[in-house]
Length: 149
Ligand code: ZN
Image (tube, rainbow, N blue to C red; front, side, top):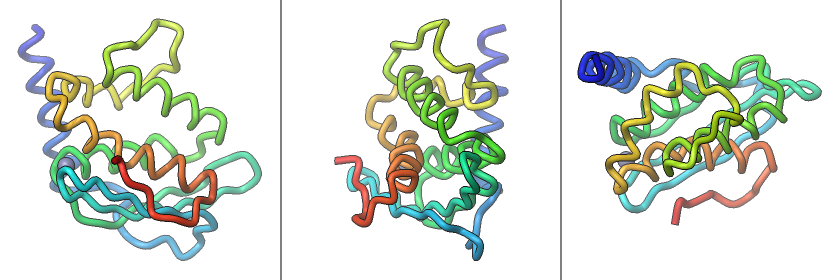
């Protein structure tokens, strides 16, 4: 059962890395940030359209490994019509999942749980977190490109 679940998770990751969702420019964006993971060479630009307290649209561009691309794809799916405060809670919950500190009281991750297996590969955690750090920078309107280092 666990092996089957793993295969299913892996299929979702491969699918999102080959056919990333929400990939491309977002002319209506009013927040954006650039992220770079020097350990792997992953680069991405995240574009958000924030209206009031709601993230209406999220799209990304860039070049990265399968994990960073799948993570950005899944993140942008999760962000659509998400409240900014809920996006912050998701960041904390996702980070806790990858560091093995997830608690039952953390925000439910839903489909994002397919990336849970990354915690077994410490060298890839920064690949999975890149889109999330970039999200934080975009929400904080950071001017400088963010780095996972
Ligand atoms: Zn990577």
